[in-house]
Length: 399
Image (tube, rainbow, N blue to C red; front, side, top):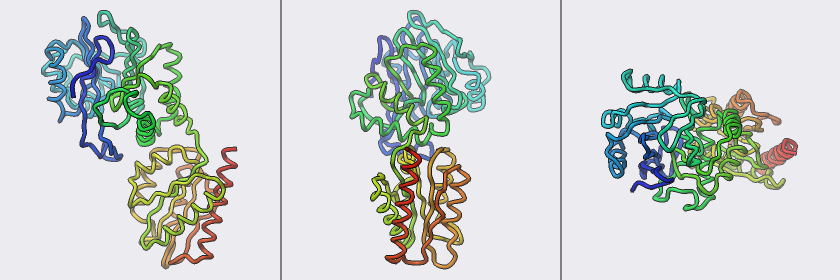
């Protein structure tokens, strides 16, 4: 993909990963992704972030389209995660920059990852201003958004915020800007990204948005390290982050389940009927069909999560255990939870699910529901009543 000017003398020099589907080993990226790097041409030529090591030659040739790589004076490392710093040793070897700017934790992380104390590190903080000539850079540490080293870089002359993983999405495309692709798609991918990566740090998101406002930064473009660059719909993505960070919930329930001989699946559908009859939106998601990251994309704004599994070896099915472990780590708060499932002879799964939900601080207004073997008309009616009861709890919570 050709380099692209995004501001006067500021260029996108990143790469597109068309084939990526597994993002960092835990989340799906069914549309691929980009690794965005940015090059500023000024008296001090500056590169912001790099790309994974396997794409180092792609980045090298992108830069060479504009300048000789040895002309790079500065490198800014906003985030040390290997998809943004993997090519850094190669670029440093070729460019021999005067300085590498990073946060305090960024320097520690670079030493831990690349073990080279001789690089020309210069630690920056929220008070640092670096002159590049006609342009300058201000910095803001954003620790745990989503790594300890993370920081924003702001070029005030261009009203440009380079936000590392913040406001990112996993979308591989030849288009670079948010007004070149359907906005609904971009926001959906930004929501999925938030749900699976940023959600545990929602309080930090709130503080960061406040800090940016208090800093008085006049921003008309946000350039993340993944996906599309925001130039026309900044208000939309900022509002999305505000809503997701306060965990604003909808009149919506996610029923996530695994099933062996479809008895638990029948229960899931009956519970959904009860919810829908009370005007609650429902998403039914079988873990055999939906990846846990896709489920979290729905959970992120749902008021209730209802989990079902048949009992297997005195516990729940493995996919349900996987999902509950994953969801618990992402720390959704303020949700209603419930559990259900079928069984043949022991029936422990719903109780074990409920214990995990309780430990994850879910509100559990109802007792776990279990049905022996194949549900009857009468037991499915109980499932439907469970759905209605949960609907009332949702309405009460959100009233």
